[in-house]
Image (cartoon, rainbow, N blue to C red; front, top):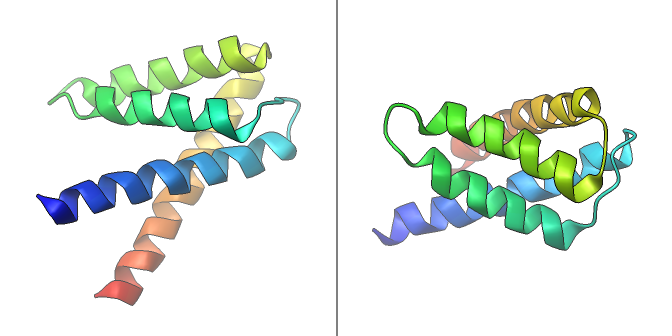
Length: 98
């Protein structure tokens, strides 16, 4: 259980940092603290079996549009970029740690 909690925390922090960088390169403006809250909530919702991943993506975009007061299309691009970079970073970290 301890290893799963560590992976969960690492995913939340890494995703938040990737999202923070993505917001700096886009028209979406948000601070790191609200992004950590968004990513934590999305990660918890994504743990729901079968439908959690789609609910998580919808919640991700919705909360980002509310917090950043940004355009829906810009938020979708930020979420897509964040997910791609996070998956790539976890693959690299997984290869290094194994």
